[in-house]
Image 1 (cartoon, rainbow, N blue to C red):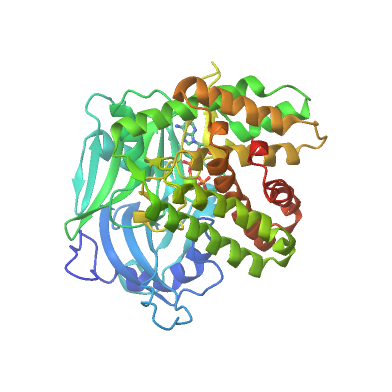
Image 2: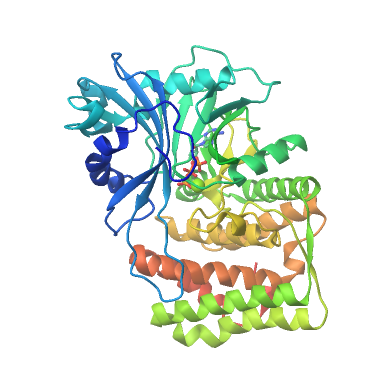
Length: 467
Ligand SMILES: Nc1ncnc2c1ncn2[C@@H]1O[C@H](COP(=O)(O)OP(=O)(O)OP(=O)(O)O)[C@@H](O)[C@H]1O
Ligand SMILES: [Mg+2]
């Protein structure tokens, strides 16, 4: 059951053929399915591993499948092979009512004919199988379960699937650990494991240190499948907290400042742990060209941007001008998709940053590239703006004071205030706001005024007003 010389694991070769018609219906309905709007025309197996035999009361398969979704061919572009997904398939004679939301369907052909298959992450026993494999550092077919030997995993922790809308799936074990199973997967090092591991090596306390992780080894390459981390009990995320404080008309500047400090701690540790590079004239030229190209596409797609285009362009060309004068910047590994929702505050007030996968839609190589840390800072600054606009009763000046406090906190740890580099900050904030305009115009037109108000501010060539 392989695309190339991929090992079969221990699953029956007819397995995917029998699941195929059910998965074609089920997969596109999943929140984490990335290819929305295009039909799935078939699957090819990448790996199939039997974790519990299907002839028992409960069977369990781990599958990696490639979903075929024909694209309209673009002349000159290589054909898209289709995204790969990680599935955990449970097999039972019949589903108990509590598992109804997990139903994939009833199999009518092949080795599983007569059985019911379902998304096994909803079920306690399969989730326990994964934790047990991580605990014992098991190897099953191509699957490798690894654990930081200094961290123990107690057996008997009760699993529950998190049901929040997510681009992956997470299971919480006894409020002690959380296992994030990546759904759309690619071969190679994944920053969602790589960066927390690097931060743990540096002793950075702002990220829950990975306790264990799972990978598939196929054709000599690892595919990172999941990461187990300590669960921050009773945590609230920064977005929830900000909205709660806004609703009460309470000040959020102390938290914003703590978030700035936390971001700087993470950046400082990442710069120590992993290579940094100096961005000179040509690298900055490419960066500016990318920003300008995204702006032109956005103006084309969302004509309401047109009057602001010259001002927005100037945010990018000003950066290009500094580069032409010989100014350089340091790039390093960053979070890549930082916003209030990616920050967790424990009940004792400690902040952690989570979800280092970057923008999952971008290629892995791009997500792992060093970037100026201001990219994350710009993301957070935009997030304060979004929170302020989401308040039922607006609090005048809320976003501005939070943004300033965040930069102050950042400077306290990093030793440099992002506001002292206003051209760079404005360029990154503008790039982000332009992205948001396109996103909102496509998906949530009611939110379009939020990035548009930033666009109006950023289009004015007064970098001192950037934060
Ligand atoms: N270590 C943790 N402790 C407590 N809760 C956590 C932890 N890690 C993640 N969570 C919770 O799980 C949610 C999802 O985690 P995460 O953002 O890593 O998943 P994701 O699938 O990448 O989500 P998204 O769709 O937002 O990108 C978080 O919003 C948070 O509520
Ligand atoms: Mg994510």
